Image (cartoon, rainbow, N blue to C red):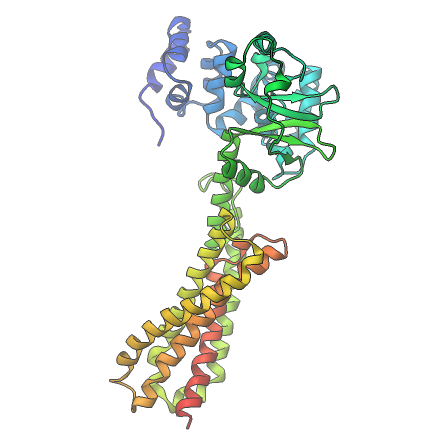
Length: 448
């Protein structure tokens, strides 16, 4: 929800060109809070406020503005002024933002950006979306092995203005090959006379520039890192990915998985920002697939119409059978997809997964089958007939748990996102199989 507390005052300050008050507003609060109070402003109004902040603070506040405000500022303000401002932004942030701006506007801005920053932008834009290269920043501290520890501070002082973080300091050779890492704490604690090479850690965790961003996030989380170096095939250091970018990746991947598990094609923008036609299309694709899945269920029922007519009481338990199978499949699919994303299981663990799901299927199916048996007794003509329900439930739950567990593993093995095996998809497949199992069990036990 937009915080409108300061909007009237801000607009009044702008109208009166109250420089002192606008400068005080920019400096009085944390940049995130300042941006929060500016959410109701247009991009042009927000930029007029930001002009009263010193450049480093202006960059900080700008980073907390909404995506819509940032894009609007880039597209509406003076191109030369924006080009100069882009040079002050963190390398990864400016590349991401330029990707949201209209291409023809980017073409107008790019020639006005300083040569070094322009080359950096072009270099970062060449990496495919979703890879380590696309989310890395080139603003990291470079040190040489033979640099005395007591000189590190002076070297950092020269680089500090352009660095994303100084907690991790990377040691490279003359050709930028990654040699090691030293923390700022080790620099402070280092004895006089020692060199960076004496203190640096050589066994480093790094990622390739073309690695998937989700794999990068997993590594950072597993090793509890503040940043991770990005290297090319020859182990030359190209950049770093910091923990704040990893958090963004994890949120993005979690949102995408949540959409896919709910049978919605992932949205590139927020729900309210997504055009109605686009939203309809993204939902409609999956609904159409699920519609044909439901149609298969109807066809399966049609093939057993004669059995249903002869044993009419079976109809009462059709919803029970198919919903139980679908729900058990949904549970397994959710557990396996989550376990894969967390790295709790690997593809080579498939046989252990099968064993656990078989045991789970028998336990769950057996428990529900006992309840189902007593529910069927009042309407079934015989004890044997009532036994159709528990036998069916055991088999259907077994099928549901196995399919729900194995289909995400299969998709992962094929190099596809296991979240594509969404709950509705698994449920639809189990529904069809549930009907077939139910009718065959009925024919085998009480066939007429």
